[in-house]
Length: 420
Image (tube, rainbow, N blue to C red; front, side):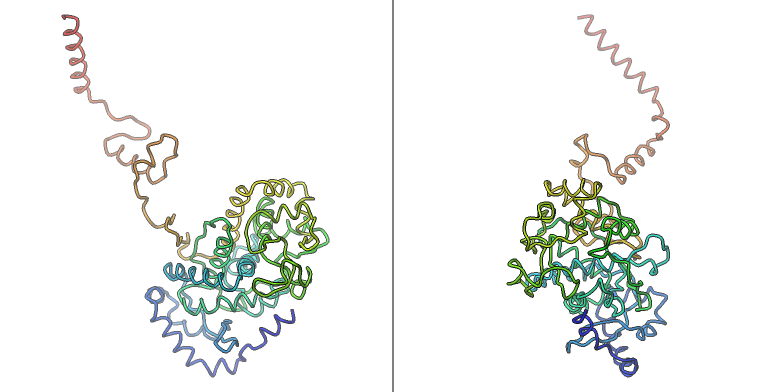
């Protein structure tokens, strides 16, 4: 906690905020004019008259001097899809040079992991809403060290003003998994940011590493989020990435033969030998527990002790494909917890978006006889059928004249054949 407190102790006082109000307003105006998508959002927002009132709410943002500034987060809802795509490419470059995959995964998880399914109101229910950018939440014990992840992403956030923090955190987490060799995560975007630190969740919603009853604790925390045993075990598999540092979490060795030389900042104790590669080795190593240089927390070991957890852990240890499939689904679900989306259904930034575009007809897709027709194609066929006078409950009306002609034709052919 010492490093965390030191890193976040330079917040500007309220007097400085007031003194910089005019320049902050100017910077906001410039950032709005630099993005056509932001302008569209502002023009359509009923909050335009109140935009500058929000600049009094503290938002942590790293400046070039390394200190934190207080800037208002525009009350625009959805992120800009093109800026999200560009931000993803910048995150990939960041990963190549800093090897920060584990901490970016953790940042996304901890922003989303505060969700409480028993609370309906947003943002009181917690979840993926960008609240982890504020000092009050960064100082929670479970978030020790995550200020470093925020520092890494802040230049990207400054570059792409049309991307919300909530989307950026989840984009970075999913990209880190994929770039480490993990599965493609079916992500959607459009998360709305909370506007101030008063909207952060209370401390204590995230899991502990060494509770008295690990299995009960895991279920208490993850069931509260609406997750089940399979998803608990699958998500635990992300410990195949990263290290635990005793100065942050109180767990692990200061260094091992696998971490003493990095890459990145050396030290800590990893769960796996190749702790920057996403695979199923976590489950193999936890099951065997043969290497004293590999970390096994109480919440790790219980995966092979609890009968329900063990069913999935054993499966993932021998079948990486099954693990990847279940992990991708669980990660996507976690990233959406508690989020408020604009548009409400969210949107994809991949080449095959599932919302907002009509399905392109490809004849071969429907010609196998084994593939289920899409809802869009079913509607198209039904419309054409009804256009001819048919309904799902009644066949097309019979054309009696055509039937008579067919019968006469058949009789003529039979007469001809019999005559010959």
